[in-house]
Image 1 (cartoon, rainbow, N blue to C red):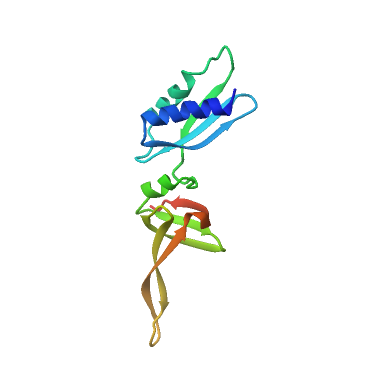
Image 2 (image 1 turned 90 degrees about the vertical axis):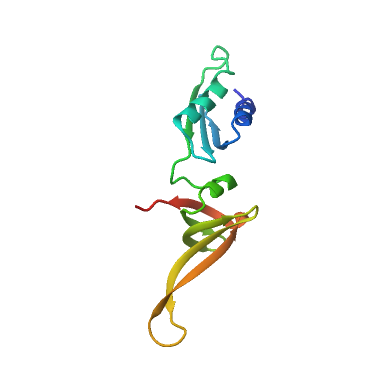
Length: 154
């Protein structure tokens, strides 16, 4: 079974459902197909079933024995697609970026080239003793992001 064949079937399904997008595709030596999808509005069980049908109904089990698993990206999965950032505006992200930068902040903006994180921190007062709460902001280019994930706080 060719990975290109499965990719084409996925792309055809995604043309029908432009709110969904592919995160990962793996085909094991035993023809175990694993597909991970995400969506601009999240992913439902029905979305996974739709994608499963879009693939499975066009493959012949007589020709190739295979197993198929379609899943959604988990809530704390790494963000690997620019569209995932857009859908997570307003949420807290943990970002590791070049050169040796680690930030945790609220994702407030997403552009074609970068994301914007904002957070509050205590810093010494400019004059006198004590600390004050200061708003901070960082713009991080996608190319500099090594790892980013949503932090869920209760």
